[in-house]
Amino acid sequence: MTVPALALASDSSSLTPTDVVVVGARVARDEITVLSGADRDGLAAQLAAVGFGGGRDELVRLPGADGGPSIAVIGLGDELDEDALRYAAGSAVRQLAGVEHVAVDLPASDDARLGAVAEGAALGSYAFTEYREKSSARTPVARITVVGTPSTVVADDLLARAAAVAGAAALVKDLVNTPPLDLYPETFADRAQEAAAGLPVEVTVWDEAALAEGGFGGILGVGQGSTRPPRLVKVDYAPAGAARHLALVGKGITFDSGGLSLKPASGMVGMKYDMTGAATVLAVALAAARLALPIRVSAWLCLAENMPSGSAIRPNDVLRIRDGRTVEVLNTDAEGRLVLADGLAAASEEHPDAIVDVATLTGAAMVALGTRYAAVMGSDGLVDDVLSAARASGELLWPMPLAGELRATINSDVADIANANPGVTAGGMLLAGVFLQEFVGRTGDDDDAPRIPWAHLDIAGPAKGPASPYGFTGKGPSAVSVRALLRLAEDISRK
Image (tube, rainbow, N blue to C red; front, side, top):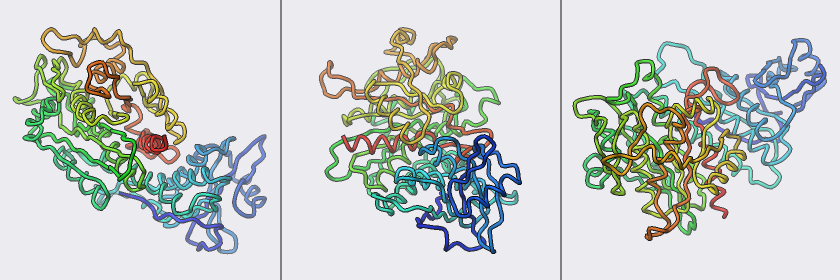
């Protein structure tokens, strides 16, 4: 897990010639304005000489004066809000890989902007090199000094949150980047326990025998085609005195072949990403514990490998979910909703204040929203809270409806519900949400008690990350929704 050492300083005077100072500049009406750092007029003249355009992700490196550290100038947009500063700091640090120590001196005028600079810079330092032996890979920035002085927030708290966010994102990326040969349900469970070591959390693991005894038919059914059996992992952070409880449920398909409803060969490439939801909820729960948030956060990791074999589930098989409800499987490649059904049912038994599930669930989400936006649907009030947390953390989430009329299309002739409507592609993302809603429990034991507030995040589009890096996001997994969910936990803890 790659997390740089973070520090705050009131200026960059203590840096050495081998370090780099990042400053920001913008261009308006062909006039370059340097917005931070020293000798701004001199820097502006140098930038004009090299044709600096001020665009986002544009980085120009200039020699330092009198043998001092070199200057890296990053383009800034018109708005100097938290999102822009987070983006610029992360972009600069990402592009400065190979430098040991970077000072980031951007125009952060308040504590929130200063925190965004620290967070973006830390996020931009990520790299995954575990499987590189001979190919070249530049070492990420190891030390980051953020130039600025908090006015009201304790400096250590500001840095601790930035480090926790970056650490959570790095954990997700490390897990997703790991090849499925090495990351499968059992080893994923082991990695969760290792990541939780030393934190005030309780980790419970259900193996295949315990899953059978507990009635987790969805997870067992999806995993029964693999020689590497499934697991359910619960990570429970429950601080003393916590008045609120947020439950997170993550899809953890460590590799998705489609099962007997086999994907084409090209469709299997990248299917190691299908456990991103489980990695996300794990990382958020551990970050909440690391920051000692005054809220209980429980993460349910629903782990299975979806493979074709003589023991795999077949179309028309019926699975019994944890809550006793039965599901007819009409498409074995609609497996994520089957494992999530078990996780939602189990999480509901504890009657949390809110449940959020996270999953790379449908290709339809990518068709609808592209590769930068994740979809959110569910209970209106909680969806609003999730969207508010996303805006505050600079994440791109978009609300989608739960189309009630779609429920009739997944009626089954033999079971309580079917997992798919084969051959019908209309509203595929929405249909998955409608299916999941069936397994969200109620706030009380009465049949007419209201459902527990619930939100479903379909992160299939942005989870795989960009083809070309931008901002603090490099190629590969993006750790989408980690920041929004951590902010959601903070927001709920204050209610």
